[in-house]
Image (tube, rainbow, N blue to C red; front, side, top):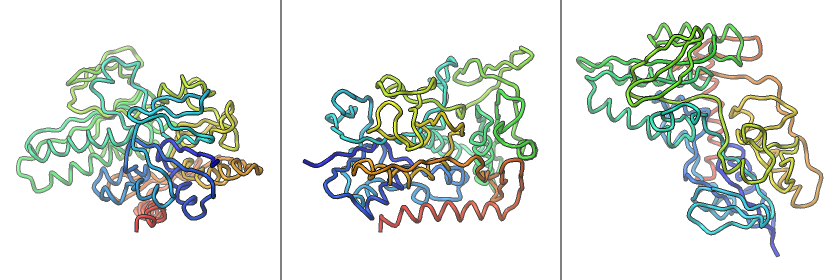
Length: 384
């Protein structure tokens, strides 16, 4: 009787593991990929896609092609629960999928539920397909009515929110060039902290703050959103004054959280609902289940929810899945303490952040472009 390995999600780690599995499959193992999208975005190129530097095809991984290459059964559906007594994945529209081994790489979603109106009126940055749908609707509206002002608010001043603000501005500004009586582009960036990109050094934070202000992007620091309405945001500053920010589109790029079904599955999680894992990427409570990317937390190592770690986990995940099935020793994945962050500013320029060190140069954007294209070319070769 063959063993069954089920992968939930088409994130970066699973994309790499599927590619490696296709090159060196394990006989006697039935492989299944469950994903709610056919094309999964590569996070490193998403800001460039927003700015118009890349096409949809250049920035998305074709999961049906990748699953075919890996010899995996593909189920396009949303996982909504786990039955850990029966070892089954419960999907929205398909019959339960049995597994002997399971790996989860489904990313995360921004926290919105605690703010009244956010769930109804804000567009979350994740899941990315939902964000891109909102972004395309905005671009279509601007194309049809270029004379009208566009007022956008971005909630969250981390690297994701800042990069999104700069790349949205670049795309909309370029579309307005040459348009007679083109409407104003108004972008508000709202952040509860006193400085942007709190996980990065002061030089990087101050440099990006200066760039945002130079482009006319309005900054609301030390400001917490308390309510979201159809055409405005109500916020409170640290001195308790109330601010009303008129807006048409709201994009939510705040601290991440996990889907509720993970928390209620019975698998061990942290307080935020993320799966607690060992150094081997195995669940702390269920060793036949693995987790990587944003959905996983290793309590031994405090690291941000960043795509760079999901990419690095791909190869050790593949190795450990094989080893666990074969009864061989597993290897540890120790995330690096420092990592190079390359933050695009929307004008084919980028800022590098590494520990206490920072630098801005167009050469860094081309370095980022090279790294991102190299990763995508490696994965997309299976589509040929």
